[in-house]
Length: 459
Image (cartoon, rainbow, N blue to C red; front, top):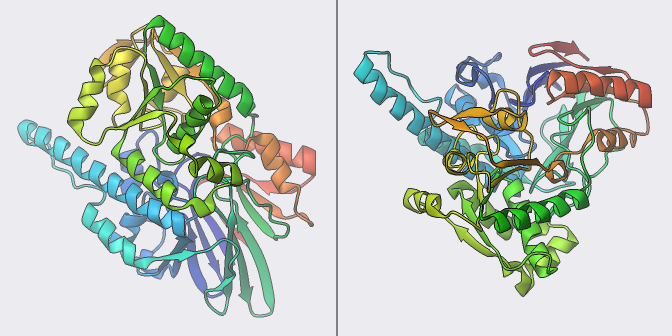
């Protein structure tokens, strides 16, 4: 048996793990890399023959876990794609949106290239490539044990991160020898809005675990909600807008739930919230269709009239989005992308970042090299859509809204194993992963590794 780390190794994005076991080649996630030189990295050939992969497991539907699936199929993959029902519905929206961006960006570049005599490009993949992905997807329930072949059995359990997110258990047999592998996916923190808390796994021989927040703890959710209320009230008093860069998947839906509850609890008056993201609109509809994944509090709120306590405005076309530029005060605008690297959020930053009466509220992780990271690191000026914009707005980072478990929660999750597994630490910036390794060894006394990209381990 062999386990190879092809992405999400000493970096947060691009998760992809290749397991050779039980007479089969399987992949766990096939994510898009997001960061410096992303276009070059994502266009590189896979480090394996896609046609040799019998099964791809998707732990959840964020782009950094599924974004290269259309390229995988385009390059020859014809196996099974296994995930949960909600994750499958969301993946369809995410991948079509990603393909649209690939096509649009390439078209824009090629128009410019024709004028300057440069070489033309092809998109990483197209919407037709996404069409070819969908027939391979199989939907599974949490807790259902599935036999894939004589050598491999699998099960998903709830990771508590976003709707349909899962931790994967794999039992692999070669001859008389059986080994169990657990791939954490992204583990949610306790008391995430809407979804249930993550499920603990009690036994495994080998654990591959994320470390996004492996070297720090979050503010409490109550603290973050209190700060959000204060920011909204103070910004509206000053006559500005609250701009929230948010991931279309997960974070936007959590924010809507929280804002709705704040109005219901009379902490905010009836407010106007603009969701400026067609993708977020579609994903919100998927959430509404999958209440079976909700925790009891979310089910109760979604089934009462109070769900409409806030005025939600979904902007679907470009014209409606442009109109928001004329809204000068008392608006909460939630737009993607969450790291400010693309999408409509850049236009709202262009029109509000320089206004001292406005506030920019970050509610998710900002990777190195992204525009969002530059802003929270204190840049006085940033490039937004080709313009050098001065930063005068109030900048707020509310860590309690993260959908990821923090260091203490990750250590608590690992501590539930009945016997010590061998641990591989992934999906974190290098320092976070190495710091988390030290925490695991000092707190729990367990053997762990921080694989480099491309590193392979013999099991």
